[in-house]
Image 1 (cartoon, rainbow, N blue to C red):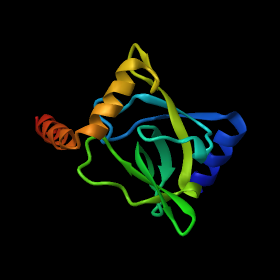
Image 2: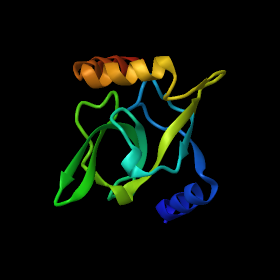
Image 3: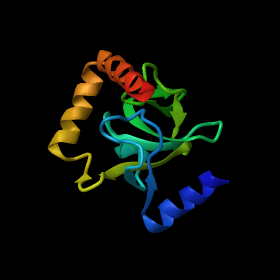
Image 4: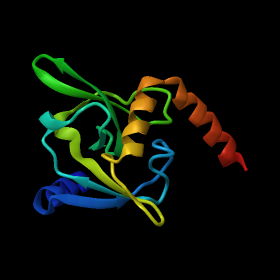
Length: 144
């Protein structure tokens, strides 16, 4: 499966680069931006990190980590796209492929550690209503 191929590649090479698709992480990540993800220990993940994961239905998604929940001594991760109104289904550690380390936009490289990216991550997690505003903006923008 694609999941196993990506998991093998990221473990062997330490990273993978894939173009983004969709607008759930707008404006931080926009369609066509080249995103680099690195292999990571799930115990080192923290709120605000952008995580690449596979859903049970086989979708490849990169969303922001909102919280970590412990259920029956197992760690589960609550993620959400910046412009999505709801949370993703909880995912297990086995579904995580990597953590975002850079976004290549047309002429500049953004890193999650950069001041602007860190600020954006804090803002979007602190003010959930902002997701709805962004979603309405995108819906209008896509109609034209």
